[in-house]
Amino acid sequence: MFNTDLYMNDTEMKKRMSLYLTPSLKKQLEQLAKVNNRTMSNMVEVLIIEAIEKAKTNNQI
Image (cartoon, rainbow, N blue to C red):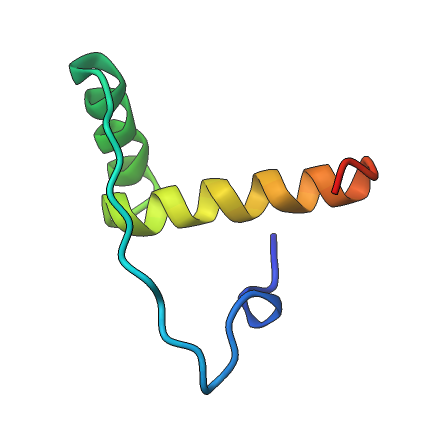
């Protein structure tokens, strides 16, 4: 599990972002979010945080 405190402090506001997904990818994201009891937006945030943490562990960033 990750520590979201590392990615946002009390003075930071989340920024809105838009993206384009194929219908099949969107459907799979919806399913993944549902089984994890998350909104789609939160699921995307979690996946990004996990990818960043993995990249840091592998000294990629």
